[in-house]
Amino acid sequence: MRRPLLLALLLAACAGSGVRIGALDQSPAYDPSLVRYVTRLGTMAVEVHGSPFGSSGSDAAPVAAVLSAPGWLGAVRFVPADIHDRGYRLVLVFGAGAGEACSDLPALPQVSAAAGLHVQASFCAGRQVLSSLVADGAAAGAPTDLAFRQMMDQVLVNLLPPVNAERIRESDGSGGM
Image 1 (cartoon, rainbow, N blue to C red):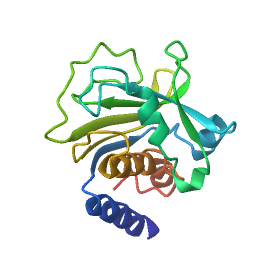
Image 2 (image 1 turned 120 degrees about the vertical axis):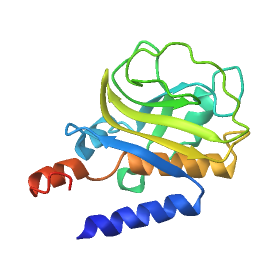
Image 3 (image 1 turned 90 degrees about the vertical axis):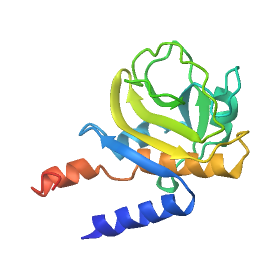
Image 4 (image 1 turned 180 degrees about the horizontal axis):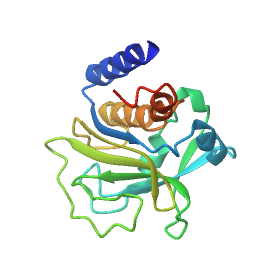
């Protein structure tokens, strides 16, 4: 009975900030204890594709600097991923859809963020997607924009939840219905 209330609270929080979360998908392999293990040293790698601000340079460092881990995870600092390290990481793809975010992505076209911001976010273990979602929100001109920070907060809260709802549905026999 708690799941509908939790879902309603999450959706209300997203609606209040103008952020729309969609296509949320968790693999049965997603486990919050794995997220804790990955962040045990206080950091998590983040790979950024595209630009949320319409710039032509890399936005990995400024984006990583403003990310905040969900409260259940504690203090975690996000750091730009080493391009050669394809282990556990958060992958953020801004702009047009990119297909499988945990795989090698082709160069993405620069997309104007003037009309709004679109992001595909994935928590990856190598090429395996453990958790993914898409989100849309207000356009942002810089990482310090409140709208951008609120959107990234909602993305991470939904992408890295403290439970795997898919596992709960499987174990209680509801099968997701």
